[in-house]
Length: 137
Image (cartoon, rainbow, N blue to C red; front, side, top):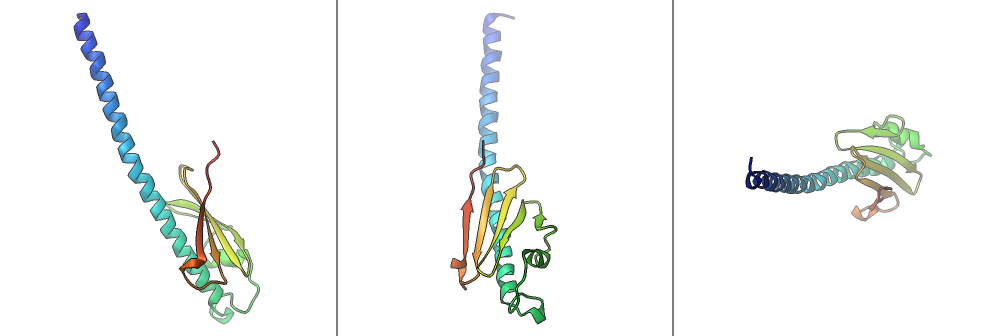
């Protein structure tokens, strides 16, 4: 092969490599956004379940009028040992008392760490807040 042919092969490899890298980059961004949205939807579901549990009388399986523990809330939410795992993330119940409940979410590739806090004294959507924890490099 001549030098011109070798140069064309090298340039072709560089162009194809750049195109593949750009394509992978373009596809991973929507995946991260979708993963975040699914995780937040799961957390909002848990928040509504926590609020319902906290406001339901004990005679109906809730916590109203009693001192419930984090373990009983975990059982109500179907968490096993305070952990729930699905295709979106691993959710861990980290705090529950008469004022707040907190759940930590970590996705499967550990690129997303969220802590959701539910203020049990409030009644509206303002009761739910999120905090993103930056992963340690």
